[in-house]
Image (cartoon, rainbow, N blue to C red; front, side, top):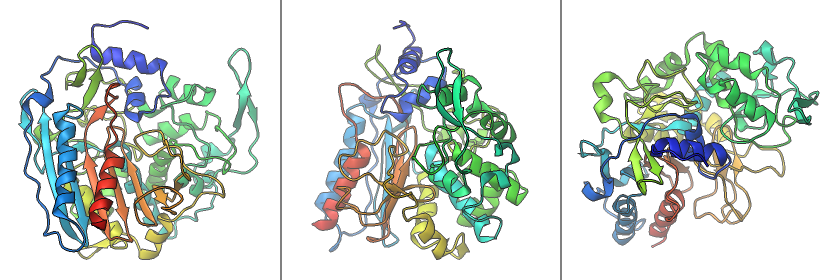
Length: 463
């Protein structure tokens, strides 16, 4: 193990060796390089806002909501996060809303309702909704081969092993990957965020997630073999960035331009985009990383050198390309408007984003028989019950009893690399959003905010 006096470098080196660790944020940090300062422990100067909640009637108990608030505040007090913001809405009414802790550790600035967060893979559902708008416009069919619209994919092959010298053993496709495959992660594409196989190594070595634009990304992906025959497995992949490329081809607009015109502006998501404007940068939450040397989470400094696959500064000049897979920043209120739109069946405040039929199509299981997911957007799935399913853009809890989940049947969800998470439960007409910013794990303290918050929400529902 290479020793370093720099805790961020130490974290990066460690995760290069343990590239298949459970924590998504830890894996992504392999591809970030930055200096790290010895900032104050955020738990020492915690500033917590008072939670707000609707009057709890037959649906929710005040005791249960107090337990939820105690749980989230406790993460800050224990130094697990510098700050945490959460929003819980049922029947279109705010049941619980709170922000605890800091968004700027050095300046001791408390979180506010206008805090901007890196949502990383919570970008993916937004991109999938945008692509399905173009599906409704008749631009494609779900089972169209990708090569119909991306000629570079006409000669894809499948990785069947490796020779002793590290060169790949390849086999031909049994069938071409389709747009449906790209939307449900069954196309066979790698990602480069984990895995030591030839395809994932090629993603890292050729810097696919550091491409200058989507054209370059597609060209590079076309040169890498698929991990498996399309439709035969589920594997988290670069395919949502390929969806972003398709959006540009079908619409004739840049991805950011399209999202702003067709989703963000109609929904009033004014703080969501691919970078943080200079005038709003003071609202941007610190990104924290676990430092074994310091024994705590410390902030990645703004002057760190981002040479990695994923951005963390999100200044306009530092973002490598508009990534439909991981590129957005947002506020909790903005993402709430997106979530409420979905819960409403595709519209909000007179803005019709997609049809109820398309919402239903996207949020039901789309996987081939006997396939389940092994990732939840933030971490490796550790499910001991029936694996969760996947729709067109998010995980799906299709059978709560078999999946040992307290959520309603048909709940859909995802998360982001820095720990953000959300779920939408149509049966109980509710959604929950949690925002944090951290990479890595404190090895001495388990941290399961998604599972714990979900358990408390449904306990209060039952009381």
